Length: 340
Ligand SMILES: [Zn+2]
Ligand SMILES: [Zn+2]
Image (cartoon, rainbow, N blue to C red):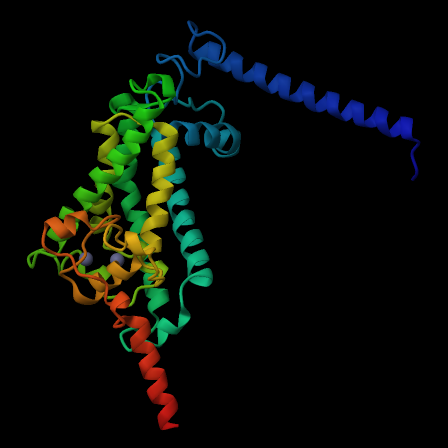
């Protein structure tokens, strides 16, 4: 059917008007529901500390939850009659968002890294175990599932306003300088805490019960990054959650650091041992971490080599001395070619 230009534009105008009216009515319904529940509130009330369901506290998760709750969970999952500020509803929403977010982040970034960065020749290394990738994924996915329970308890504590997270740069006493300092502080604090927690995990009374599961993988792939006993994984992630309860941190910075930390953890398991020359002594990269998997008592650090140097556990990466896993595989392949 061929419509004239004026008919088409008239139909388009009617459609746009209909969509505008529908969204206006939806906003009115939402305001009315809010006024019924919070009679003293002004309009949306989303930033009034006393009235907004996700806003009465400083929590980085509130932005994510507000979006998930308003556009996905209501009304498709929860009945409209269930108040948004009900504790059980908040905990369920937090759990769904945290678990799904963390699993997707892990599987997405690790898969990307596995296919784009990881050298598949490493799978020919004699210490690369049978069905390793499947085992890593199974352990990683299971660990994230169980870890999400105590993690959600901490996020809920944040939502209740007990953290020092803030919304606007103006709330930082040093402005942008304060934000940059908080990033440096976060990296320093978490690197220090993870070093000592990780070192403690290697204590002979604890190692076999918790941390050994991660060390099954001597030549890790990016999927080994989250393959821990759930309690081990949670304890090593604890410094990230504790930091905003002690120090002020911008919410968006906190969420960005959460993504960065996951990405970094994957990257130190990706078998790409290249590090720019001047940074070799400062940064704890994949070359350092694979030596930890192989030799156990060296390079416990997360981002930097500082605490390994102070704690006497630093080892210069074998891969950078021509004695790494790649060299080993190359030698084996050359020998196999000679004997053919
Ligand atoms: Zn370890
Ligand atoms: Zn590892």
